[in-house]
Structure formats: C-alpha cells, structure tokens
Image (tube, rainbow, N blue to C red; front, side, top):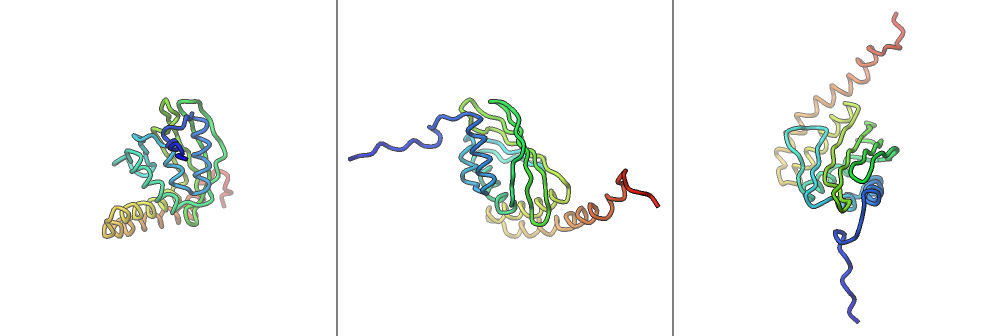
Length: 180
C-alpha cells in the first residue's frame, strides 16, 4: 500500500503561539535544527554583538543557531509577552562560566513563522565571551579558520577586561557600597 507523503513543516498550519512554544522548547534542549524549523524562509536575525551585518535567510540564521547552541548552556525561558504578530521572550543561561540574560524580540508572518529575531543581552562580560566564542565558530564553519584565529585573538583582551572590570571596578560604583 502506498502511503501519502507526510506534510513538510512548511505545510503544517501554525500560529505564533505554537511556534513560540516550539522555539522555547528547542532553545532549552539546545536543538538548533528544531529552532530553525520555526523560521520563515526569509527570516532575519539581528545580533546584539554587531550592527555591521544581519543573518539573512533561514540557512544563515540556522548557522548562527548552531554556533549559539555550541556556546550556550542551561537556557531557561522565564517570561513571554506579546501577540500573534510580535512576542518578547526573556531567558537566562550560561556562556562558559558567564551567566547571562537575553531578551528575544520575535516577529511573525501570517503563517506564524518567525520572520525577525532581534537579540539583546547582558551583562557585558557574558556578551564579550559570546563574541569571542560564536564568531570563531561561525568562521570555521564557513571554512575560514585563519580569520577565526584572528577574531578569537582580537576578542580575548576585551573579554578579559570586561570580566575583570565587572568583578573589580564596577562594584566600586555601587550606590549601596559603604564608603570608608
């Protein structure tokens, strides 16, 4: 007996709520492929690390998600607000030893697929850690290992300075700190 072809993910009816639930579950599992399945073909990702370029199209965003899942761990979404057109998600996680918080602004097409993903993160030491890890991973996946080494070497001092500054200098500006 011939079985009918199973519908592709693009054929399955969806909406922002079901897409968001799938997106969150994929993020918490570290499943870049499942996250990419939530994207529209023409999706755009806007990085918190650079304004120099955007990741355009499902394939480029998928590559960014693969690199991110290699760097991030312990993702836990805790807050979600929005509607069928736009949602904001908030989560915590780790990049190496650095804890971070991220906000994700998701925009959806008429089929409930993510068309735009804008990322915001804090604190600065975590962002510089992410920059130093994700950039080289992406470059290696693009077949540019030499440039990956240059980017890794260039971002290492920035990551070190922000980590030391966060732990040693920033506490000196704490308005609740007792002055001696």
